[in-house]
Length: 177
View 1 (spheres, rainbow, N blue to C red):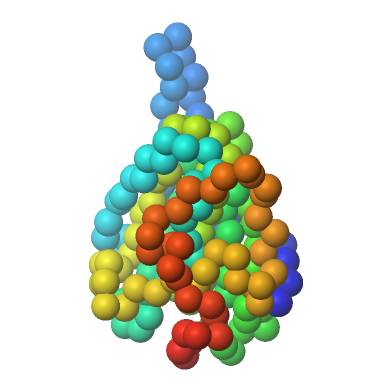
View 2: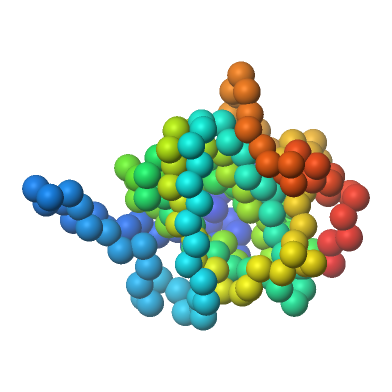
């Protein structure tokens, strides 16, 4: 269980949005069909107003696993993925990528990964494209500070978490198959 480069993870991709500035503002595409061929069925946005807000590490179990495209329209996040595919060479390894309005990164996360992030700026707007429906009965969370994952989160005086994320289980308490 270690931190790896995104290139080490099979089927994980990183893209960069083009940005077209004008005297009125800017225009950007958050997706085009040349990026990925998944059948995305839902677009979602998450607005987080506090720096130091942690979301994750979330995933859904079979048959509701989700692939995601994640980008940040405003603000910045440190985004983390954990490979939960038991047959993978990178099983339980993780990666971190900075996604921001400035770098315009778009991260593709395939099925079989846990996903989480921390906001590193106030008023952050995150955009997702998802290829499967949300199923509360199949949703799982691994505690963001689970020592077995060895994720090094940035240090803040105070972290903000939902009740679900505060009460998430350790990896060894979950039945991952």
